[in-house]
Amino acid sequence: MKINEPGVLPESNAYFHTSSLMAQKLFFTLGCTGHYFCNEHYAVRRPSYDSFLVLYVVRGRGYCYLDGQRVELGVGSLVLLDCYLPHRYGTDTGWEIYWIHFDGRMARDT
Image (cartoon, rainbow, N blue to C red; front, side, top):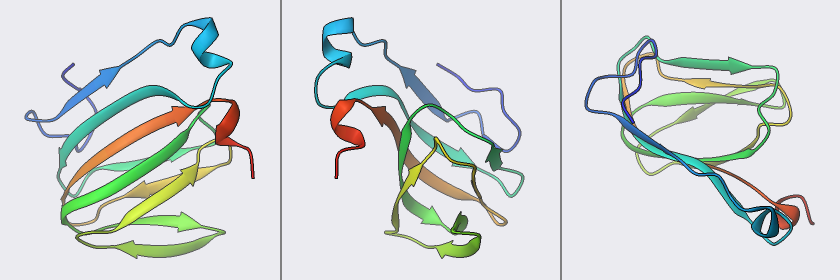
């Protein structure tokens, strides 16, 4: 699916998945995933989103906020965000990222 979102370039793609009710009761479920190429206008700030996010930086630099502190993300950075909580991430210069939103019963188990 092509994305029409500020800062997301045309070569980007996102894929969405709806898990069965049985799958939702088990382990982990994939919500959506993507490969984004972004310019300096890409930024996400949400009060919540019902999932967890794994984000991997392939090229460029970006940031996320963890416990209110800005954390710089460079090539090879991998971050896990609990999107049930307020979250914020993006890039000031442009980046290429792979990302996965997932959930499931095991996602919150510690």
